[in-house]
Image (cartoon, rainbow, N blue to C red; front, top):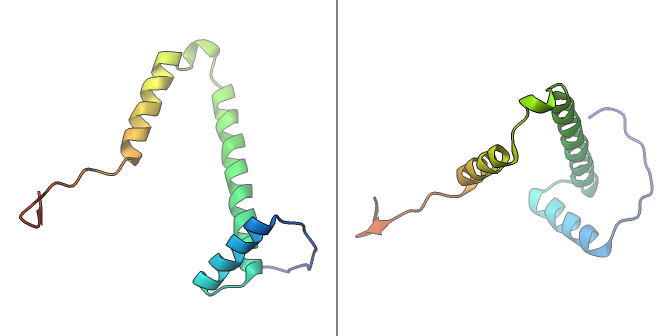
Length: 93
């Protein structure tokens, strides 16, 4: 990590409690947890902006139709769902 700067921020009580618990479980400082969260948020925003720029580069006629969008979302969600495990006599099938 580069240079740091001490600041004062306001954070909700529940979020602070959760951040402290997480820091304790991970054996890191509260500052590390908060810095990581901010870094992840910045990276996510950059990815979203890059995705919007890519989409904007397509002509409207080259973009997915509503039906194609729905099919893609269904396909992507299916990949995120855990596979069903069938057990028989204590073994995985």
